[in-house]
Amino acid sequence: MSLIETGNLSLSVNGVLGGPNAAEFSIMGNNPATINDGDIPYVWTLTCQPNSETAGTRTATLTLTTNDLDNPMSFF
Image (cartoon, rainbow, N blue to C red; front, side, top):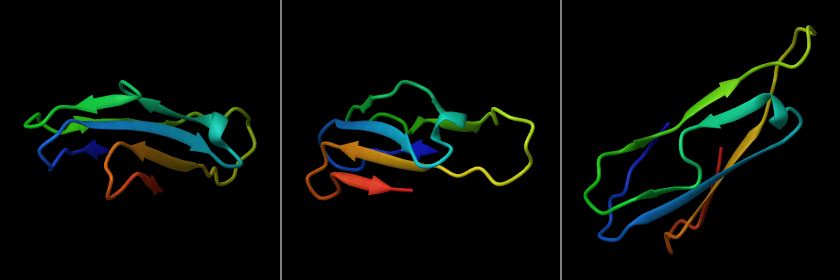
């Protein structure tokens, strides 16, 4: 996942995983992250490590909270 700052101020982003299998997912990269004005995109890698041998779909929700007044929160 690429985090991009497109305005003229630093962007602060905090990611939180939730949902039924959130403990089986992780965010790889500095979290929270700050992307300064003019910086290259910052990359987070999202991974899933199932905790059991049980086959099946794993789901989680990623919630991003930012200091962007127009988009203070996003859900994925």
